[in-house]
Image 1: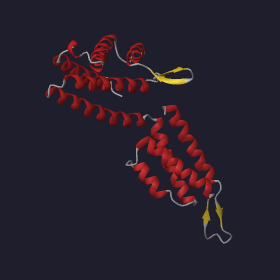
Image 2 (image 1 turned 90 degrees about the vertical axis):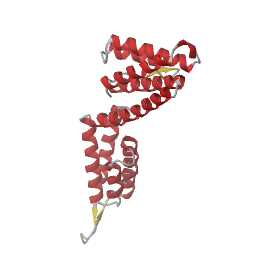
Image 3 (image 1 turned 45 degrees about the vertical axis):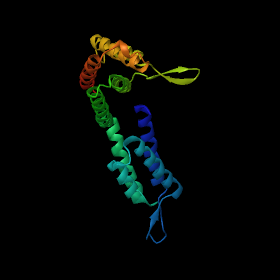
Length: 223
């Protein structure tokens, strides 16, 4: 899901919350009130699904929504709107990108530590594949951050762009310079040799240098 789609989805959920609130009905004696139950439970399930996709089940937004938005009454509906408005604020101010970037950076760090262990154990070939795959995913995330399409369309179907093409497009968009582009090209070439069984065309020292270079590149070009 793209950032534009996130914004469109949160807007539609807030609109659904407003629509649900507009159905508020009070009993003749004024002792109780409620909202349309069908709309309310559509709001609850759709919102929880969206928040789970965005943040995961362990995030406070998900836990609060699941705990506080339970009954088809005006108060719970207002709480739903409050949480959704907070999420909308994070999306519009770019905090969501920062959050996801931090999580992604942690995942990348774990993979590179795995590669470092493989090199220490003299397993240069799987290490090269792990480093190269981590680099490729980082390029893809950089492209998303900078609004560069990561897919091409062929016969009406989306096809992921190759890492070399993303590398070129990121350089053209001045996300990083041509010197970095050349380094990325060489790292991707080494990864391809490892993936295709050309193990004699590179050394463990070159894989170690690749690891250091990719770490530095990811550190300088944050998501």
